[in-house]
Length: 534
Ligand code: GDP
Image (tube, rainbow, N blue to C red):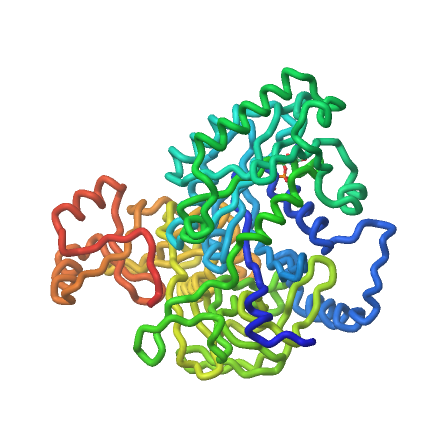
């Protein structure tokens, strides 16, 4: 029997993976897709003939637009749930894209390298999850290599992230002496065996045996058995027990150990998500100016745009906006409106399957659809059938790098401003205009964003531009309860203030010391490193 729209929405699980480069995100992603059956291995030809048409439809769109969005969202079905795995860019460099993608996630998997623990980018990404209290499942990867003692690893998570750890499994050994892990819930032991991808997919989870010396003697000696028996007990005594509510509120993380490369622990991770990850979350919104909360029970189609991707082909100006659906049943061809009255006929939205990219006929809360447009849609825009729902919570993050953009040909400055505004609307970089003078200050969270911007300005706009050291290095959005106080501050600090692309006031400081000094002197002004549009 067909499911109702509410039942369809309720079985969506939308999540992202956060990790430091090299921890194994890509390997884990592949293995999750493999376990979820979204990737078929060579030799296993799936009966997906009926999907051919839609696939080629989509291929045409991709070719027409030259946009490769295939990997932005990966959808697979597992245990009657529909998982949407949101891909976050994997560069060293940190970009706003990554932050924003997390605002569309209802849960996250934090991957740690067992030899390294919490690394700088894990921490940064975690902080973004914490802003929204996104529930996090921890996967401690690379147990097939020499690892830090698991008790130490959990202590580190607890200390650095202030997050309670509830291990669901406990590993025995690591590297050459990695034997597998005890299931702390059932008391069984999951035996580690190097397997090929094929075996992992066919056989499924790890082989389980009873936790007694006879049963495990084939693959561990009695010392090892004594050790795991003791550690499993100790882990249960020392760590907090798993608490679903506390997990959903973002205070506690269940921990699974494994090795993505050797296909061990991945099914257990997916089973953990299946058991505990939440359905699409409710979102705060304003409806005709009134505060409201929109959740999957709402019938009206609504969602927000968390990412805009421009065409790689400079001859095509169109973009794809990624809309995370918050409520309703979307049907292909529906008209959706933004709160500013722009109406888009969404005739060819795009859904994403790992292998079969298809044009969506239907989508539900939790799903992501790609909306082709010609630049009308921006990150943070809300769309709905009525055009009355406006979601908050897609933040801008204060840039960590500021540069002054200057055209080598001063006659072309206007062109440059237009190009930079376009990129800011797309969310590639930010643009600030100081109150005095005609400088264009661009900002980015990571250096790579600046490179991408420089390349696109030169390739798409044929402008020769230099990005120089700016007078300022720190930008903070400023607000005050009393508009008169804000005006007075802006007037008094004309040398150090400006506006962002939306006209919101910003303070531009030489360094963070400068900012704290001014902030101390002006307690009625709020200086923020993030700006939410609501
Ligand atoms: P990402 O940068 O987080 O996407 O990391 P990758 O998935 O690209 O992995 C980085 C490196 O670690 C690659 O050489 C992987 O083969 C390796 N790797 C990933 N998972 C494991 C694992 O479980 N064990 C071992 N030994 N290597 C792994």
